[in-house]
Image (spheres, helix red, strand yellow):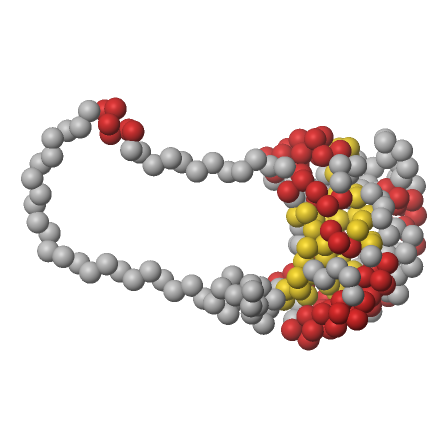
Length: 254
């Protein structure tokens, strides 16, 4: 199927294929219709339109987002996985942030740093901090030297992580954060988070290590030159090739 310049399938991009407003029906002179006989109540309600119901909230269907510097992408593609023991070319986490995650225990065993982190939103709080200048103790000097457009966003569905997932309703290294283990418990916690409209900006999904690169369905990029650069990297490495889509709002400063 053909794609537009932003990486979306033809006809699905509102920028390249703007939707036209429906044409107005021509007006006709009003005429008085004969009064219809009142139908029985049963026949009136039988044809009433059904109210659409929202699909159930499932953690397995939740989109998850991992932000990485473009210079780290080639090694991820070569390894075929996101790994917690990888040595990124550009490490945006500070020594303090790594220490906090290495000392934050999980009830199921291990620590937070043993798992691959994903945000629950492309506008997560930590990602906003990073693209706004990386102020604060969580970020390295290398992070403060970057620009938002130096990054790409790897997008997957939570089901790609398997059943052994951990859902955190806040920063996974923070003392007050609550954890749900497994898809079933995670779904219940996700429903509470949605009902309270809380936790999306700070919450994390912690996937088992390693997370397969084949589980990445889409790579979001800030502009067309970055899209071309990502496609060149994926072509040279070979193997899994996710869709690459340009979406500038994910990379804008607040």
